[in-house]
Amino acid sequence: MERVPDRHRELYSKKLTEVYGASTYKFHIFAIGKRGIVGLAWRKERVELVRMILSPNEDEIFLSIDAKFDPEKIHSEFDRMCLLSKNLYETDYKRLIN
Image (cartoon, helix red, strand yellow):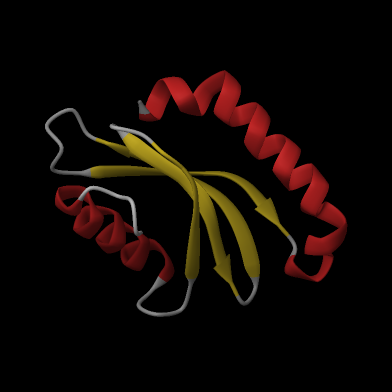
């Protein structure tokens, strides 16, 4: 989480660990805003498009899993995943995370 503000990095990491378990996932960020981030969470058995939004008082994170992908088919679903991510960012995420 290289570009995530320091004051939020710990909250995002804590929420990911709570949902996916310690050290059992990888997370790649697609977009960072003032109010949240969007990225892919990779685990052995699944890949998920994840949105995390800061609460109004910035002390809690709301996590939403917006799409799930089968790792066995991830190469054939990659174009679909990228298109979905781009469309969601343009129509919804940009407004929610900024």
